[in-house]
Image (cartoon, rainbow, N blue to C red; front, side, top):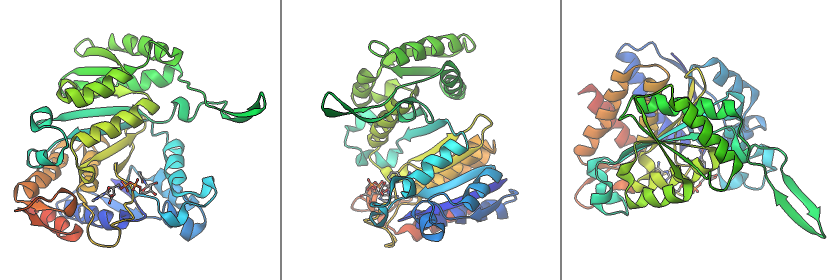
Length: 355
Ligand code: NAD
């Protein structure tokens, strides 16, 4: 069980330090874990002039899984695009073929007040958004800005091949099989050719999974349904750009960005695991960051790459227990509860695991 640990920038090193304490605990408990750290993002640029230094990429390639913090910072905002921190992450996903992005949006009962939606709309929420990550309009060619009729024109190409749709659809059906066997495919087939093909191929793949109930929804409706009645969904599968927007919307249903993990997987189950939030420069270095999204990302790693469901659950139960005990970092704190910093939250999780 070889893990590349890439803390990144801002709060990245602080939250990763707490996840590493959980790794240490798992190792003491008998899991054959090995890990090594390397710089990425702005830290990679500082160390080697590259947001994804060759040594970091090599380490990531050799590992079974990658634990990623977050990247970005104002000091890097004016660098040429290939040198910017987020390019390191985008390249890593491309280089490793991490095409399936899994984002659970799960609302812990203790945090129901953190959502901006009414408790009855969100309580018990547990959905999984599956976003295709390496295709679509973000990568389609041609793209550019050109002169046309005496003015500039910007253009991009939305593009999916059958094989790309088929493999993400399969991940969706497999995920649905492990949950409540309902899959909603989101597209814009009433307007876009790409989506017409998407719908056709997903419908074909459905024949391999007769136990799963497949539905289709247009993306504009899905955006509306997610805030109207999010509990109607279980697993949602969608393309890169729609998934980008819907997964951010879904994450906000829970109201706590510091709580949400994610996984990006390749065809063989190798994965990059990271919290969904960014590097939060506003709170970096102040022991204020919530490390739970990163710790929960580690739980996803045990589930999806290492197939150790019982260990994944143990970590998730540990997090639940800590919340039930009233520990809260500032982002999820409410009067009457115990406000703790990043390190104390790590202490509480390790204690809950040991207890
Ligand atoms: P952000 O997610 O970093 O922060 C948004 C807000 O949420 C901030 O107020 C922040 O303090 C808070 N927040 C985020 N994570 C938190 C945590 N764990 N605990 C407590 N509060 C938390 O988004 P942003 O401010 O738009 O971006 C900041 C930087 O992060 C930018 O450079 C951006 O490019 C980068 N970014 C990186 C990633 C990534 O590494 N995958 C993702 C998104 C943004």
